[in-house]
Length: 199
Picture 1: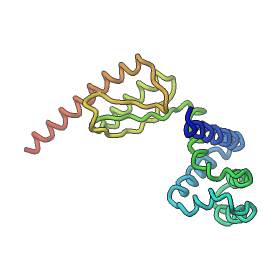
Picture 2: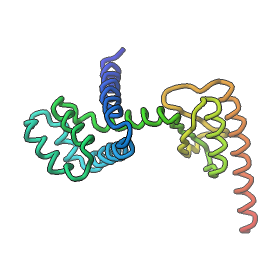
Picture 3: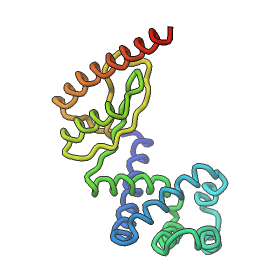
Picture 4: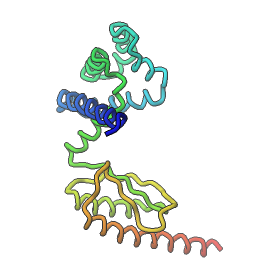
């Protein structure tokens, strides 16, 4: 294993450990609120590089940074989220917040029997077609598939499915390829028909 891969694995484990601790603390009446707040904080860090740099700067005194956290977020988030930020600050793990937010989302979806599915097709599928794909995948996995569509024009036909870094069952994959080919062909036929009507 390369050094970079080892570090990536360690980062993932750290994020998951903190995410599970937060999930356990929030489970119940505050779960939805904490989930939304952690996701929003991760988005803020993506959009504000200076704040992300403040969170990741290990040379800043932690007590001083805790005061900044209280000033910025004290009235914006619930007590559980605020205390979690303090813990991350004390442990020097604020830079992991975005990874923790992703891990928290995965844990929450797993608890609700959901799984994120990335679907790649050459042409855009309708909502009904995506629902069909989601139902097929969900039936194969025994979970509710939350489908996100991506367009990849390099795909000649059918569709490509990614579920995290895991491969789906071969029989499900075969069904999806057949379903995808049929959907793509119907979409292309509809597109050609539309062009003929316009002419």
